[in-house]
Length: 438
Ligand code: SAM
Ligand code: F3S
Image (cartoon, rainbow, N blue to C red; front, side, top):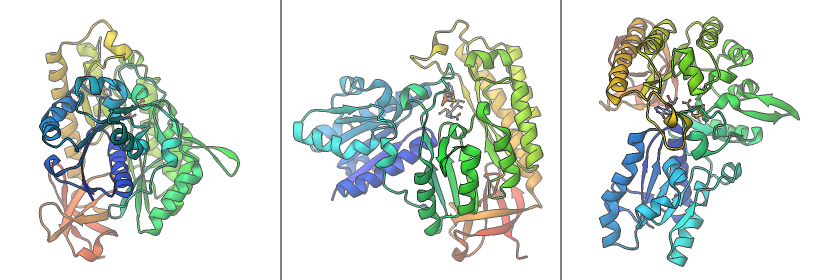
């Protein structure tokens, strides 16, 4: 029995992969998790390269465990995720004490790679894209309470001009319908009430249901039949069909929350980003979604300081964010990624300007989210109870339909159940409430 120290960076796809890695290594190698790298027999970094800072962190973190390897040569160090995918053998060249490099599509091969490393004494690198093989070799998801994540597709074929994901995770590949349904049925049988369907572009999902071609809206019908609440992330405006909008009207199990990255409020910039939609098209989706489900919360991703972005372009983004009434959203300063077309564009915006715009956008987005939270005070929300609250063991924490954490008094018997909670106060990143007895 050895110990595994695993650190995950980046998006929810990576967190999902990390949970699978831990489970895989638990089964194949009998590894238990370690709190600190000093206690570990195997250290795994599941890395992210979507922005500069994330990428730099990997080598800094590797530097911090180098001395452990020197003191204990039997310690294994593995690097996975998108930095591994991009750099491949370059990781071993820069950090020769690394034993195994694996990509998002080869994580299921990790036990064999470790085995080969031990047998040969040579570092092993496998960052290939064996397509759907990954889905076939993964153990079933472990459940954290009443909520679980289920991956329905991998990769991305959109090639936005700023983004590394299509290069690091490969093209879009959908997981077969039967496998998705079997995994969700098993989760539901174990008491899971809510599932988040995961993928870089879930609405690019295509499959076969009862010998017929099916799309994401069709998949949702089947998934919703098995669960009390269903979420998905991330969707792309380009394939946000009327059928998908109608699903939000017809399927009460669909959470009233959609994360739909817009990136910019300027058509010129959207075209340069190769996003494949205009602001008008985006607003039309938002409007029809609100018609279909009036209480829906819309959140988004933004990039500011994209090459060529003028002050007027940026102000258009501020305006769109306000007019679309976005709830708690993510915003990032543009980070040129090696190998992406945008990194070569003229008109790179000075870093100071990028950061100043980011600050302005974040202040506005925070105020919008706060106003929505305050508007919820006095209302009653259907809350899925996740567990004891982080601050006090006497309190419970749960999540509202629009993805906010609510803390309230209640007994442990409520964990894993939906309960009505009256919202009594809005805090900066959570809500307070009390159980509504009725
Ligand atoms: N398809 C997913 C989505 O749309 O959210 C994943 C894309 S990426 C992992 C998540 C977000 O990171 C993007 O929506 C974008 O706002 C941001 N992002 C991606 N590349 C970036 C870059 N080069 N600089 C700054 N932000 C970036
Ligand atoms: Fe990246 Fe655009 Fe795909 S942001 S993940 S290339 S949709």
